[in-house]
Length: 140
Image (cartoon, rainbow, N blue to C red):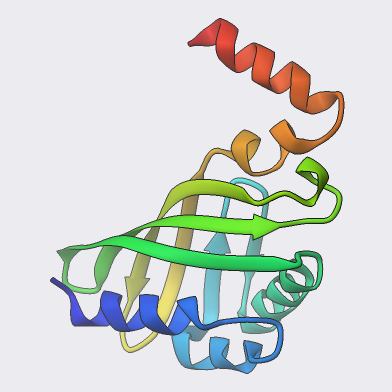
């Protein structure tokens, strides 16, 4: 089990809108962060992304389920994310499962999140949500 991944997960799980300066201890200056909805390059851009993310939700937390190091400086974190957004799902709690692929030296320089963008966002938007859920049922 990777000590680096465990420490990263513990630190990441404590992030909130009041302590985003902690990103500097987790990520390198040239971080490339990608998820199904965004891609940002560099620590200043990552700060802006997380500031926007945390300012738009009323609750956000991560439960880390597994830590898998596959090579020296490379590994995966499996997680559940729970959040509330006032304009999604009537402000109810939304849960999304995903994983993060990380590359690091002393800090993470590449972070790629994998999750179902429909489960995160599209299924919870009025009208569009019904269409996405219908499409998922039809293609299953």
